Image (cartoon, rainbow, N blue to C red; front, side, top):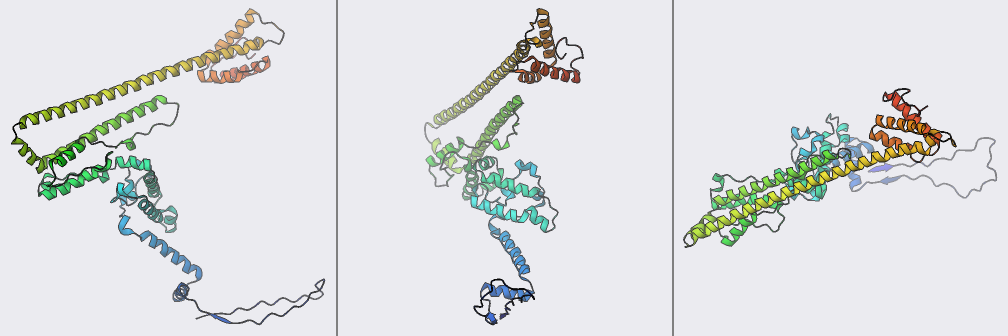
Length: 449
């Protein structure tokens, strides 16, 4: 039982000699103080009892309870998305984010491409609460914030649909390895169970849905043939662009940028071809151990036209494969030729543009002295000798500067008409060239004098 005693304050008396101007009127008297007993109930009683039991103040109890609530949040849903963190993962370099397993960093290795946005957000929140630099500093941990940056990068990638799809395209952690011959040959049920897991994993890359399943020993010939035809001509959306080499952002080295882009495109095509070959090798390996195909072949063997049908089918597939290969090669060669042609044309245009710019800037320089009466006072006519000397000095200066400096000087002289202004600009440029050692003092006859 809590007892609270409230003492009402007493108004101070006026000091001697002081009066309240205007006077005042007494309307009543203060009531005497009353002692009341307050009894905490519900959660307030539990908090009161806890403070009394542990001899804590209000602030101490609130701080301890807040710490326990954070711990409960960290430990919540541990069985669903939490995974142990090894030293190798905690010591990852944040700069090497492209090679990190984003799902493993957030503790979602079991979910991977099946993880929902809600699960990703929950996993991220738990990781942040555990590894935030401020919390590490408060607990006296010496761990740097490198792994926290890895967590933030993983969350950024997985919450962006485009970036997540690019990462899922190269996420080998979600792959299921094909079973060994010994494991798959134990029984028909083992064969279908193990190989169904493999193809269910690969099905995530299919552009077409629904994806047919391997089935079981009761599947019909049409279903089996439809399954293998689908997987042998599998249309995958894998792009492999997540593994691209970084393209330089600067606009100066355009050739290097085009080279890197071309290199990335070729690397993607190569990986796409290798992935297609890998998947077809899986299909071939599965077909070798499929007893249904063997049974179908035995049934076909009984027919009169078995050899003819098999030969025609083999020739058809070989022709289709050869045709497909040739089409792919022709397409790749044509695309490469078009890119090279486009690159040559763009390079040629750039050279022509630069050449025209140089010509234009030279005309500006020559025109500036002409418009300024060859740096003579107004009203004084420039003779042939004066014109030759001034233009000769202009040619000499233009021969000492590069295209960038030429453009800068042309920009300063553009629009100037007065001889004094033009002469000042030329004088500053000549002093700069003399200071750089590109021009000797006294080498010019008229400019800068």
